[in-house]
Length: 233
Image (cartoon, rainbow, N blue to C red; front, side, top):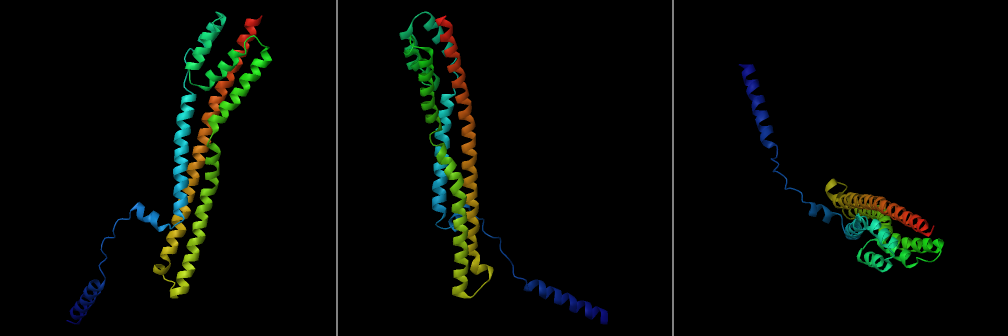
């Protein structure tokens, strides 16, 4: 009987303890926009850097892709027209073809009859301008890759300042009182790093694409000069 009474008392105690535990309702889902808003005002320049990075990447990607499009028999057609002494038609073909190589060849064809060295220098000058056009905007990506994490670090500093300010106002060091400052600190740091990493990837990937186009331009220019030297003999 004593054991039964004790077991019943224990059961009642456990039941009471279980009932006293507060029921936690399912937390509301966290939206990405809500997290971004927690980052504070520093998220505005970080967002601007992200938009600029994506815009430059898309615009440069399209430009470089068009510049690297295969010309098919362009060089063979140009050489055939020059051999047939159809200089005007060769210039017309170059003007109709929108590519860096075509513009280089057009400048070289206009110099036909002059010393090979002069033709080579004119093609080289045009090639430098074309490379500059291809690389336009890439230095901005490099700058963004460097300063975006700095903005994130600035957000970290602002978050720490907010934490200490809240503590000084309330003398409360609980997680609830410092959570807003922690949000600013962590969200801004993560956002700055993400934007910096993306800009760094965009910059290097586009540089690789530009290098391939430049290599192709140099190879075609060299073949064109060799062709002209062969025709002079």
